Image 1 (cartoon, rainbow, N blue to C red):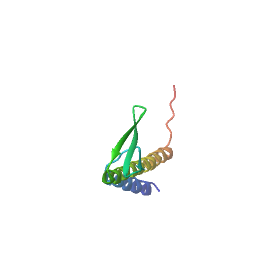
Image 2 (cartoon, rainbow, N blue to C red; image 1 turned 60 degrees about the vertical axis):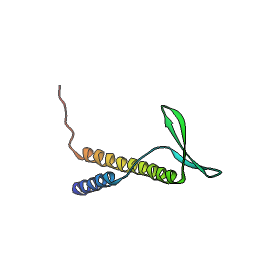
Image 3 (tube, helix red, strand yellow; image 1 turned 90 degrees about the vertical axis):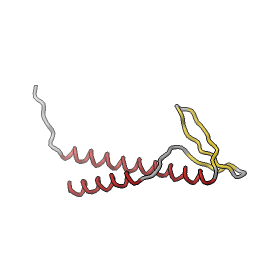
Image 4 (cartoon, rainbow, N blue to C red; image 1 turned 135 degrees about the vertical axis):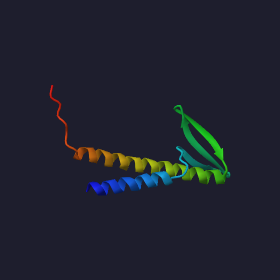
Length: 93
């Protein structure tokens, strides 16, 4: 079981390394024909106008960010599970 977790962890590391640009926020179409990227800066909402090409790139970056979060969450779970399998040390004072 442990070797399976090690292999899965290594696979996740490779997937993480292969992810392209990442960004947070959201992209929305604003008629007539413009795109807006909305995101937070120091707790305040900011908005930037984008071209259609920039919007496509930003949407991919936002999806990449979500994937990074999923991968890291799974990596943390694997680490926690591997630590749970280790014997606990008792401290005697």
